[in-house]
Length: 631
Image (cartoon, rainbow, N blue to C red; front, side, top):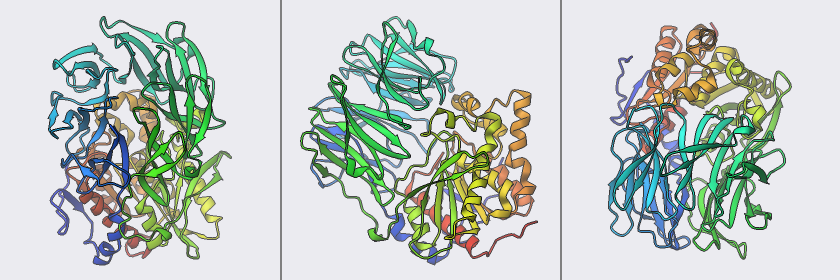
């Protein structure tokens, strides 16, 4: 499907728009400070220096920092952002690997970066999609998955870096397989078959013969994540076995005996990071959306919280140095953008290594995120974070709905949210509706299959809650979201148009049937587990019945739609069909298509442009200049 698009006069050559007015100069000037905010995140140690990711040009690239607050030495200069960086556990790192795609296609290829010369060499075939790269314990080999054989199924390979030889490890004709961990001997490995967010199968495979045996087979339907070997050949993993929340376990592959190492009360173990010698690890706790760190001693089993002064935001990226004496990490909160720090584990002293620019924003003007909850239609408590202007209300409201759906809104830094609050006087509410992660496996499944619209009803309950707040204006509410959150925006406009000013969405699903039929083959079956199998007549009928595309007559308010042309997840056809249908129904629909982007916008020129269009749209709704009366 194609639309008779026209180029917007002031936009760059890779953006195509439909029904979008020229952006006011006032809008462009007002976002200037907010669009120039920078962040930095830790990648890993390079000897005694740090490898970080930050952006000075159009996309995030790799930089080296040799001392606290030292110069950020840019070492990659590609047009496309660098992702999936893997550094070997060596004190003297000669080279490392990273992934890169073109135009947001997610057809990642593997590149090797030579530290001394700066030379970058693609070592993958150029065909298919490569993911899950990891070094063997002695760093002479790597493992990865690739779809190059079929374009759909991810086969598992081992690649000898010294001899440039690739060996198939596990050839498959089904989706969901990944290589997860090397045995210390390199003779064996762990591989995983992902079924759904709540179920995975774990296997130990012989790297020479390819024979495999399933671990944990007798433990039923459980989630399995964060898998690694310890030095004695036992395995640690994160799982929800025996609990509503995820815990850290250890299993003996020979006996299948499973023991709990770390558990938190009514919260998940979300991840962990091991020291090089596997004697200790940092365990991350997901506490009501905040991320906390704990230090676990593998030998003694002792557990202690790290960095209590950083408990109001998101700690991440924990990386031990070679000696295991220091820990590099990143931190962000609603009022502090992401930056890199180093903790001395002996003294608990923290040293900041990067100080990213706020782009001219007054730090004192930034507002914090307040955690609240409200009751839904069935008395289920729904958690939400709210950002409120410092001025007197009642304030208009923007409801931000995260994607996933098995994801979670967490109170990190957003220059856009701060703009909405400080420049437009909008209160931002970010709910974690049923189906969100972080609140137990029962909560996670409450929106599956035919319960899909129960999560939409959670937004209806949020509208009721907003109406009861004296400092919020229930007559001026806008919904916003991306991907699955984009579907939620469309569904809210179907069900609650009379209670909304309008909505904006990015790469949203407008019909689950056409989405499942057109998403990339390597992810189709995985999405069917979440949304339902459209090949089953009864399920197809249900999915068609909830498709916003089939209820255009109920959408009576303006909509802003963003899409990446190369999106492999939610194809461009999902946005094009809803745009055409809204136009036919004479409902205002602004459509913006980025020809060099995929599922999310990674290039700064596109981020800036989408920011300006979003602000123009929000102002138009608040000014009621294009608001459409109920029909």
